Length: 198
Image (cartoon, rainbow, N blue to C red; front, side):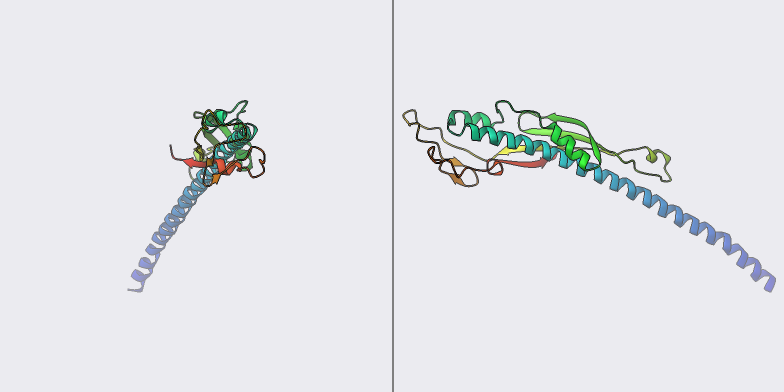
């Protein structure tokens, strides 16, 4: 009888080893999945930051263009539509922000006058794991940011003089006096910048 119990106790040990090895394997798989998720999240963060940076730079350029032409309301409509004279590409800002987030820019495309779509790739790979292909795989992500004009105005009547400017209605109203242009709207008063899903 004692001999049989010893044999039964010996049979449980291989089952125990198999269960522990299986649990260890599952833990390593979950770790690999977690690593991949963190890497993808880093890529999306870099893409979002890059798209917003490009759009904000263009917004600042448009606001500067409006400031230069504040005394010529005939140009305001074009500026609020994104048609600024001498605007330069803002993809350099997207590249800079991607680098700050440990990624690099793969593509930066203006979508019309008031939108940027960027694609980035992480500099780091997903790391070593049970799945060998992940050791060299880098995450990619895309993001789109838009510039939304916040202001409207009514063009002046033809008989209006040079000492009058239209009321600019943004989130607040701006009564502009051409003789005292001290309290002008900031870029964020004129345009909003936000991420959009595409």
